Length: 571
Image (cartoon, rainbow, N blue to C red; front, side, top):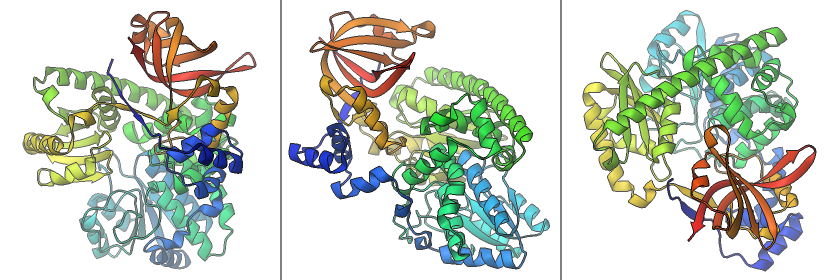
């Protein structure tokens, strides 16, 4: 087992400050402590807890929003053909469905287009632009892509087609200056106060601005589309802070009583109780099934699922996506096993801080997921490349402290294209340059990553006494939802508990079940994937635990259960 570093968020907090916050907002001390340790200012706690739509930023503050709205409404009034050009992941799928449906609702002549992952790849391509132009498109609106498509946008303009870009990916130095408007809160010249929107979030702000301009009730528009916006926001693993937190909170409420046949169908097929749906359900059950359409088949199927009003068709698509997801899992396992074998065969593997592996024919729709798994397994940035005819397409994932987009920027001369974020990115490379690229990115990693950065850590919100491990406190943690990246489920630490009972449970003893005691209080614990510890621990051992508090319901009884994130044996 890897010995993880425990990093405490704990600040020097005065008891009177914690008590004042608890009294003012009527929350337990543990909630006040978490919020203050996470840097939430006392005056901002009310907004954090309320998650009110009144705190949504005016969409017109986004640079070029006025240009985009004016051009779209001109196209609607003039009956020009508009094509929403999306991406094949859940963020792109949801952004496509959301914007397309809204455009139809205001009378637009609209269609949507999502490129084929295998045949066309990510983003705008010349072949698609030609196809859309010949089909009569006058205005193309990208969602979740386009910010680096300088040549493609120029080509579209030369054909007589206007392009509006909506994107959220990191910008390169040059932007597509041929675009009629560029909506991206990450633009260096954009002063919009929240730059962490997902692609669907930017599209969402666009329809809110259009609704404002047309005098529509923006609260009603927000509530109509927040379910789709929440799906894409959670799936794209953007920080669940600020506006994202409000979007996901409202979207989850809609998803608990879904009005869309497609959402009802996919939730049912995933085996989720819609009344209790959480951001975790989206991330681990719904998003993978929607993603399966673009990974193995065509993403337009998933868009149709979100848009259809036909219950039978929705059920049919949901079952097909479920089957594709199972096929994706098998393909993923095969690639993962091959990648692990390749890593083991590399005599210099331990010395390299960045994993770069390539194989002909690996499925391009799955290598990103496998890269994420390898990143977690080895705690190293990982890039997997699938190649054919000397050309490779790669997908990478990173660890904290290593900005993958910046790393690729440093190696740009060896790449034909790249884009993405700090923790996830894509790239194209000629295989003749692969060795040079691998050497260059590892050289950069040696410069910016210390050995300590290569050790996984557990972020702990605060220590907790056994007296605070209560059912009431476990329930009150729901005030901090929705949980996700940037607003993780709180992790606590407790020291010197004594082991009462130990068991390895689940298939092949994969999980660890513990019963511990401190000051005569018995506490039940479960450690998923921690079954190996069962052979290392004895009754009476003293442990320090890092954990999340959970509620275990059994035959109508509710008790507190600790979900272990790590443990240390006191010897």
